[in-house]
Length: 388
Ligand code: ADP
Ligand code: MG
Image (cartoon, rainbow, N blue to C red; front, side, top):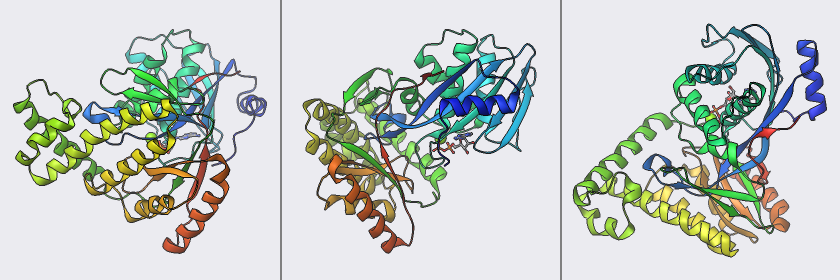
């Protein structure tokens, strides 16, 4: 992904594309999930942080009902009327902005025409959620431009709706929520049922390193649907034993142990992952607050093992990268992050060990697989806002 231009250079690019400067510029970050995988659709807990890779949009009001979009990364443009918000198959990147506009109009928000330029350095399709960054940046800009008065969580929910209902990707609320409300130096413990958030201080003595396996995701759609169905089966069984259970989130580890043998073996394994993973997220939050990074690391490795053995969503490349991390000095912990079947691992590393960790795992991974991994050293940043 190209480097992000300065705010000034971006303002000039907008001027070059549209003839005069923008009214304002907004930004929204990508994210990485530190722990809590496949818990979101079980009403459970996740712990993402906003990263220092972002999407920026520059906007200017128009007096008519036209919307003109320019992508700086793609050197492409697309336009539509507010009276006919349809997909643009020739410019699929524009469907995220179109989706946002459609959701705003459907919800009664009064927006007029506008010109918008988009640029970003969130790696696309690497599991760092560039799509949520586009949606949240667009909504943040339009919120300000048209004085819509949307609170950050309303922005997040509208971004999620744009992706689900217009783009057609079934996503949870985590990505848009952290992009909207992230805080520098912190991860966020998010309750996916209540949307309650708790800030988790990361401390200054740790770096977050994301390594992309560069493995193309296979089978992810059908395997994802299978996992969801298995979780629903398990939850339905526990609801017959404990009537207050509405999702696996409501099943404690003790309750799980007491009734696991009543489930089909595969279903029991899936449920065990979700039940233990929810507990790990809560424990990781407490460990971060105590400054106990070795414990957070231990929980991350346990999360990976559970995703490999019980949820069965890892691939050998993910396991290999995590195993390389296990034996490395200065590494607290590592795990796969994202849906699995490819994608990235995330590691917590002592700042002074980052350079050698990055160099060594990249070299060993390349020797083992012939693939060149992309490595991103990330810092926790603030959520979306207007920056110019
Ligand atoms: P991820 O969210 O994991 O990065 P997705 O496939 O969900 O991957 O979203 C990637 C899509 O988001 C891109 O194909 C593109 O359409 C859009 N997108 C991301 N970043 C940008 C950008 N800087 N400019 C325009 N569109 C972008
Ligand atoms: Mg996405």
